[in-house]
Length: 171
Image (cartoon, rainbow, N blue to C red):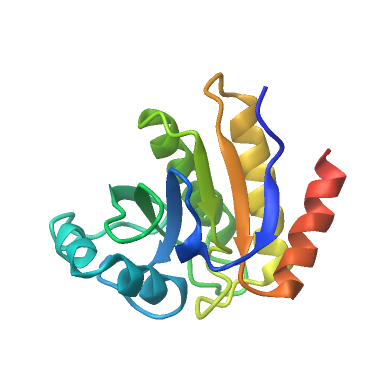
């Protein structure tokens, strides 16, 4: 049985979990928001490893070491830019969560923390993104024998309220 996913308000770069998920751009070379914070805290070694990966497609995920972060690994995923929901954004966002979870299982990780993928400069509406996140994670964990503790790490109090409300419904 999997632990129930949790939602917390925190700085994801401070979490001592097996892996944190980085909502990044397709270059994997750093940017703004959570991506920039992760790269700054992890140090230049993360950028060097990311350069060797050849980028990442929207919806896909790639794993690196975490270097100076308290986590052991960083799973980088590229969320979709919100275009009004007309360009397969929901499917691509769900793929970010699913592919990140697949990597966590493949590497036998026991704990994983997600940020709110695509809700920053990519403009995805927070409630819709959270619904996709919670539903995709619940479905994935329900299909797995591997035990994995998942945390949704929210930067804002508003996002935290959305996730907690959704998780309370899912229980």
